[in-house]
Image (cartoon, rainbow, N blue to C red; front, side):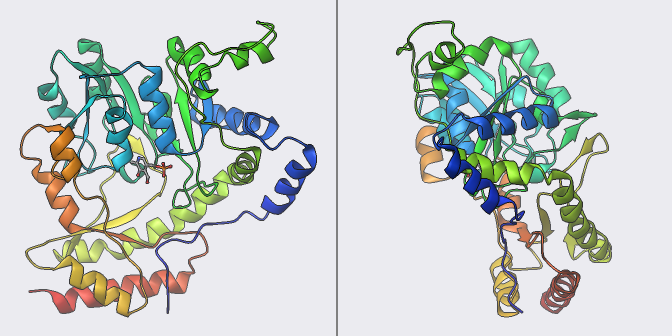
Length: 381
Ligand SMILES: Cc1ncc(COP(=O)(O)O)c(C=O)c1O
């Protein structure tokens, strides 16, 4: 057995689609394929406007630029997240303010957000960990009473919903990732989804290097010129066409991922009952997207590094995930944290992500489950 942690899924349409793009004479961004993807993203998520980017990192950076978040402003986010969540705002001179996560979903603790607010706070950045939505009801309530923006890092959450609405349609902005480890992928890729239309025009300008090129193409101005800050965020039509070929299979992708997620979840019920591990918890008012299957180990009973090594020796490539940002070298230098962040630290020591990708066979998933079971039982102190 040699089971990788991830293997990107290929729809089979890619080669024909890329050939079509190559023959079309339009390889740069913002062509027919980009527009088709953006329309599908609007349809899936219910967001008001969508712009493809080269990554979720780029989409977060765009959100920071478009909203004018700058020097000395504060942005509240979980410490248990990817570096891009913080870097995007830090690049504008803002200060990331880290709060703890909830022990159940590992999402930002909505009840700690208020205590992190100061007169410099401009935005809250919820991260929907493992594609499980944050408590957006409470987050929106806090944002409204302090007049803050909500910029969701939905890198992992395409297709997830909160109280019946796609989670990306909630708040002012959401950012998606199409990195090869995500449910839908173009290798590298992302999108900025805009729900607050006050920012839509500026977002288009920032997207097009700070020019009013969109207005030019729409015949509103007779030449385009530099009018604002901006950069080159557009992916090429080749990237967009790979994304399009995957978006067309979004229901199939979801179904296949859920088969594996559900198998893990039912198999590990007994291990949870035996106090060996803890399984993911999905709140009743949320639908997730089977992005990730993780288990949480009791660190008093198990040494995670040893467990990962044992799995690796059995041909199973399981991995840990984020190191907290608040106590990282850059976090200590540039950020501020609120409270002890005990749940963040605990998750960073105890979480193990298991392989979950389309093409993982029933026998491989069964093998992983059995080996996790046997290994943990044999290691139990
Ligand atoms: C929560 C979160 N935000 C942002 C990113 C960055 O995504 P990308 O690789 O598309 O820039 C990731 C990547 O995994 C992520 O997990």
